[in-house]
Length: 79
Image (cartoon, rainbow, N blue to C red):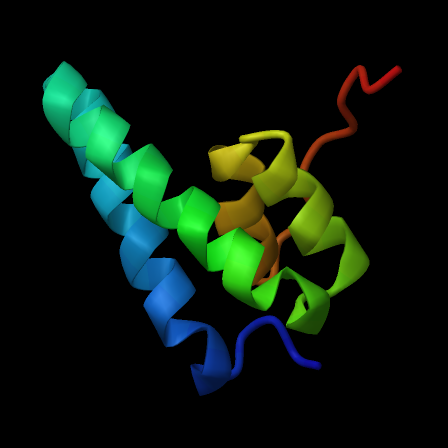
């Protein structure tokens, strides 16, 4: 599945909301955004490419955004 396809529009919107909440440092909005992203992964995780699911499960939202944008996220320190 192409990460840039329209089938990921909802996920892109959720990630954009998360990043905006983080930038505004609004703890309530961040918590709500994390909850919505967790719900998305719980309900649709099986449909996601493995790396995208990995980023979202580990709450690496910037990497998930980069992946959906067609970029190659930097290697992390997963153990």
